[in-house]
Image 1 (cartoon, rainbow, N blue to C red):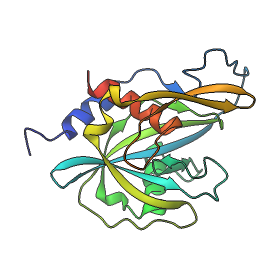
Image 2 (cartoon, rainbow, N blue to C red; image 1 turned 120 degrees about the vertical axis):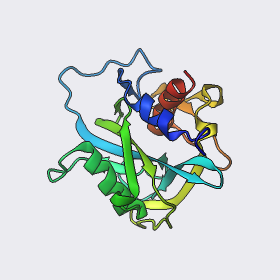
Image 3 (cartoon, one colour; image 1 turned 180 degrees about the vertical axis):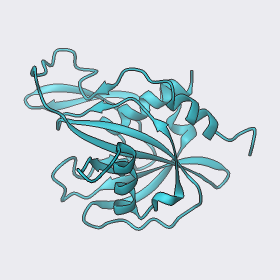
Image 4 (spheres, rainbow, N blue to C red; image 1 turned 135 degrees about the horizontal axis):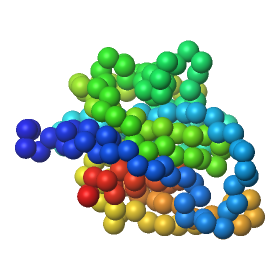
Length: 200
């Protein structure tokens, strides 16, 4: 798969740097409070070679969770004091949430951070899953584990802008549907940034 292997490309784009994004990108009228404090968090963007193609592993969050219940998300969470780096946070959370062992992941680099409406500064860590694995979902956090072809998520034209009422006013956000899965919000915005880079 030397000529079609996307991982070198992913590694190169993760090294590009660049500005971050936020849940407010499509809502310029929102005024963010000065001096707001963001909690650091990280997610793993796990890419696995499966069935002759690269696929991105995603989760459907438990409906019982406090933050973003029932939404499609990357495995991840807030940085703890015992996490030496944000990469450690992303790998630990992936192990806890879906049973992906840290030793089975080659970290390729970081994507630009993303600020959420829940006051997290989320750093996405791109990771290559070295070998296929059987996902084991933590029932307290994850309702389902599934994957989406990378080729589907790296076409900017597949992303839509939709809106809903949030705190009494319309809020716009990105959506990238896939089959029965409604991928939106922070996850879709991070993927949109990846698509913009990957297609460039």
